[in-house]
Image (cartoon, rainbow, N blue to C red):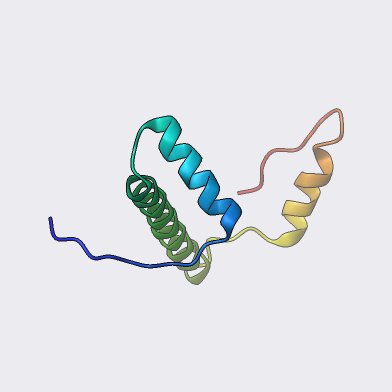
Length: 86
């Protein structure tokens, strides 16, 4: 696999944590950064997917009105909470 060097300035405390993890896991600093960057990219891609899915629901009218959600939330502190609105 081809690679490319990326350079980033990070705060010293963060760099120290990366070094500590690398030492503890007996891995290179580069391996730690690649793992972290991959996990962050996966998280951001999932966030985008979920956002697009939610926007499609809104466009199709698949929403719950605020009053229903508020009534449900308020009921959670009661002895008989109401069902989750759909």
